[in-house]
Image (cartoon, rainbow, N blue to C red; front, top):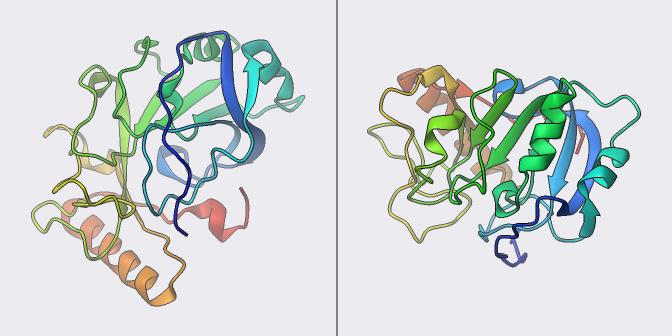
Length: 230
């Protein structure tokens, strides 16, 4: 699938956010894979990766934070995933603080390129999962990242570390940003790129498995797609 969604700039209003959808599902990626989760998918992104498979523009609601909470199921799951698009293009601080205050576990999924408007700080229930797409990561964000997630295409793998040199056909950089040197290998998640072409996807999976076996990373296979959930 070719991504035709346009990149957008950052918004700074903590009370009103651009929202794509709110739904319950099973988390299919990263450190909480397999866990029931309530997703808050925010609209808009600051990047335009050609092979991005996530729709973040077809529905855009301008919603007050309190209205977002009303859209959550009467019994939302303990794990709340704030995703996109790119969540940090908006000021999500108020939303995060409220969710943590209500006792939820909060995971934010980010490409890592933007400085957060404000950071929540260290909290055992707050997790930032960074999926780098470009050559740099915000230095303000790095100390708070609890896991990294990389998408592997078999043609673009650095033999020295098993990590991608390009992600989702975004080939404008020679390399993709790496985790800090001392970052735990088991909290680096590798998943094969989903191109929709069986032969290529099989090679992507083979390359992902090889990277995990050689460098000690954790393999992910987008569980939600396998079980046919959003």
